[in-house]
Amino acid sequence: VHWLRAKALWDRWREEMLLVKLEMDWTCKFFLWKTTQWGEYMQESLEKRLLGHRCYAGRQSQMYSLLAQDAQAAF
Image 1 (cartoon, rainbow, N blue to C red):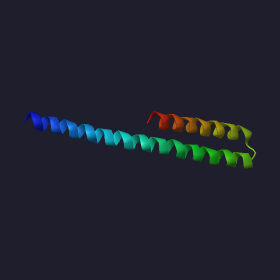
Image 2 (image 1 turned 90 degrees about the vertical axis):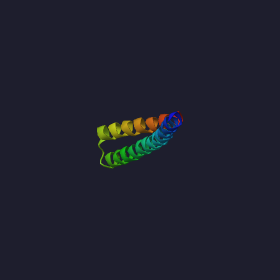
Image 3 (image 1 turned 135 degrees about the vertical axis):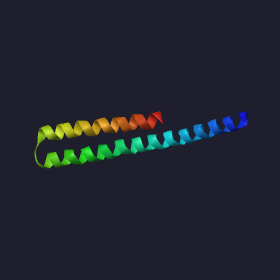
Image 4 (image 1 turned 30 degrees about the vertical axis):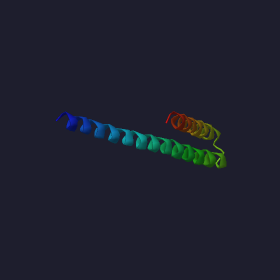
């Protein structure tokens, strides 16, 4: 009985580790996608000569880029 409980615990732990790794991969990809998205908004704002919008989009793009770098370095 003890062996079955230990094996079940081990299996749950392995599954949790797999899920955490996948979630961190998804998180990094999300941050990179948001970086690209805000970069496109920044380019559109530049073309439309909306400087305030361009600055905001540039800052958001930079923020998500830094988040992606931090997430990749941490995991």
